[in-house]
Image 1: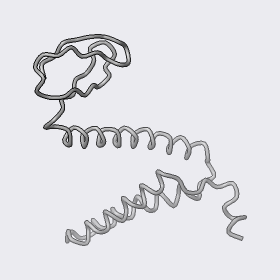
Image 2 (image 1 turned 90 degrees about the horizontal axis):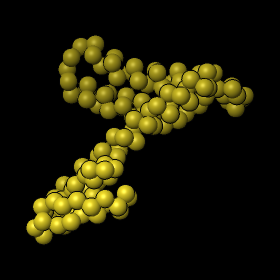
Image 3 (image 1 turned 180 degrees about the horizontal axis):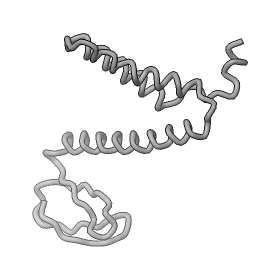
Length: 128
């Protein structure tokens, strides 16, 4: 019966899961913030997620999920790069190739060195 009910509907995806997790986080935060009626804000992402799940406009929901995944991928990449820079901060320096913009990692404390970009082959000199 449930399978027949869900036929032609969008169902769950990454954006819907993100909205559910966001709703749970907001519920927990609003447990500790005693502001009247503000806890209803935590229900908005959950209701929107359920609406998306039962929607019959599959193309629109796929476009929303695609846009979310593009933005989420950029956030994940930024976070990963930040984590690596902090981890390697004492031993390496990061430079950007002036030609193609690729980020390059070189060892610290070597003085002036010639850096060759592996992507475009451009050579430039930097002080480490």
